[in-house]
Structure formats: C-alpha cells, structure tokens
Image 1 (cartoon, rainbow, N blue to C red):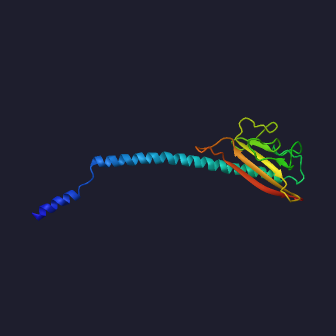
Image 2 (cartoon, rainbow, N blue to C red):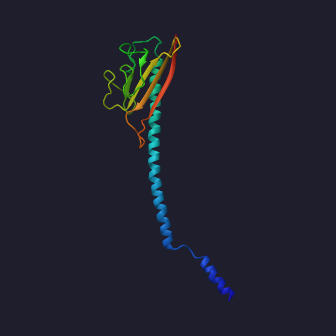
Length: 179
C-alpha cells in the first residue's frame, strides 16, 4: 500500500509542462525579443551615424585649422575659403569671424559636400548640396601680445537620429608671432 502511494506522488512531481504552457511562454519571449530587437537596431544605427559624422566633423575642423595655422601671423589677404588657398581676396588671419553656423561671416566660412569636397560659394552663401559647414574665428586673447586664438567649428547640415542632434566639432589653437 505504501509503495502504490509513493508511485502516485512521484508521478505528479515528475509531470512536465503542457504544450499550451510552452507555447504561451514562447509567445511572450518572442514579443519581448522583437521589441528589444527593434530598439537595439535603432540605437545601433543612430550611434553609428552620429559617431561617423562626429568623427568627420572633427577631421574637417582639423583640416581647416591646419590650413589657417600654415599662414603667416600677419597675413590678412590669403583667401582660405578656396583650396588651395589663394594669395589675395581673403581674410587670412585677420581678427574676425564667428562660430555661428547659422549666421557665418563671409571670408570666415566654407562648405563641403557629403564626401568632404570643398564647394564654391558666393560671398559666404550656402551653395546647393552642402553637407558640412565650417566657420572660423580669429581673436586676440585679452591681455596678450603677439598671440592669436584660432577657433574652427564644423557642423552637419541636418540632424541625425530621433534626438535631432547635429554632429559638430570645435577645434581651438593659438598662433604666436614670429611663428
């Protein structure tokens, strides 16, 4: 008698999960996975785009900085809005400009296409097809002599991802005289 009761209790404890319970659990798992997968894909795409574009803006800001720092300290005529820089018709390293990408000053702005190629612009106006804008500012820090601060800001033309962030980079350097 004790043996048969023992078999009955073992039978109940060893009973498995029914097919219906397995299917319900699988459906819940699939719903959660699909939700996480779509969120993960969006996050990866946004991060890739913003990371790639932020790196490009830093590269293009550094390119402009190198072009400006190659000028002589007293240069006030080289046109750096073209490449290679022209010997006249520009602002060189004259104090001026600003870092506003929405209100740039002529002579202190240029535009690049999506591949980083310099585009021709008339009087600082944005040309068709531009993707990156570079603005720069030359200033004399207060209380200094023979020192110019050169700042370059590069920004994309449009936002990336759901946050509306526009990747941008700013590079700052100093130029001294006589160097």
